[in-house]
Amino acid sequence: MSPFLKNKRMQVNRGQYNILVVEDNLGDFALVEDFLYEKIENPIITLAKNFKECAKYLSATDRRFDVVLLDLSLPDKTGEPLIKEVVDLSTTVPVIVLTGYSDFEFGVKSMSLGVSDYLLKDELTPLSLYKSIVYSSERKKYTSDLSESERKYSDLFNFSPLPMWVMDMETLSFLDVNEATIKHYGYSREELLTMTIKDIRTEDSIPELHRVMDETRYTPDKVSHVLTIHKMKNGDLRNVDILFSQISYRGVKANIVIATDITERLNYIKTIQAHNEKLKEISWMQSHIIRAPLTRILGLVPLITSPLSTIEEKEEMLDFLTISANELDEVIRNIVDKAVVNE
Image (cartoon, rainbow, N blue to C red; front, side):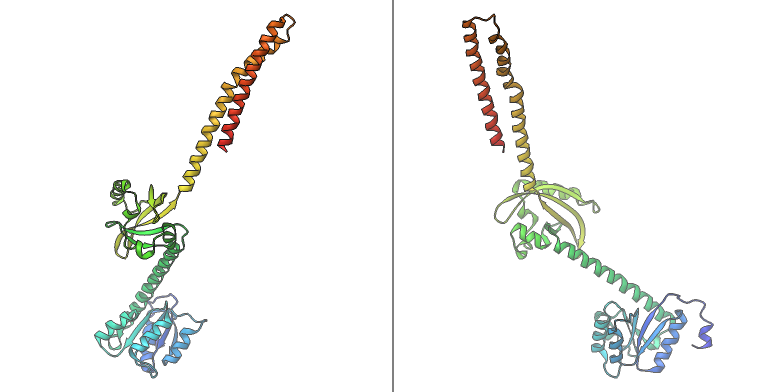
């Protein structure tokens, strides 16, 4: 590095940058190297003089570059084919094209091929190169994070065991559905994507649907909760617990919805409630109906055994005792019958 550049190290980026320069002209490489040292403290610079060397460096598992500076005229590959292959090899690493050709249309096209920036060598300065590296690195990091976030969302959506779908808030049409929705509701993906949420709702629940949509339309951060009834393709009606919130889906204001079928749960609760009613009835019979004949029996026993009672009185009391015993037996049979039905 020249003494002149050493004196200009007052304002430099002290972050670590590992840079691959793909350039067959050593004079141009020296200029780029000086520019890099002027704005970045101790950059790690690797030179590839042709595409073959570039591919070797980018394919190595022990090397990770922060940016690739690519000349478009290499001995073994040039132009658009060169861009495509380097971009494919770079994956998450931004590629900045450095070229001597001021072809605006090709510059625009190269950006569409995945290049992060397109710089003319004749107009290159230390500041413009540095800015391009920083902006391209941050932009690539942001887009990589966004892609990872979208992938995680996609996995969560598609692999969820619960039915999930994305619904247009204006038209109420299905924009996307996961596999669990297809399996649970019985429709194919193609069928669902031509339907609206109204098609799986009962007719009498449509007004309630519109009311809920109107209420939640202007609360984008709210997670809403609704209990409703959905129709399956085979005509079955199922009780469903719905959770939904607003998202932007491909530029459309939409809701992402999670549906939990609670039909079996509600049926179980109803069965338990019915059992409890039966138990209450049995408990009442035990505490009230049994008590009357049992009280009579308990009152007759000491009278029958009393030496003061005559033969005729004892016979009469035995008749009453038999009647009370039969009545008690009938009550017990009824309780048993109700208990069996309750099971």
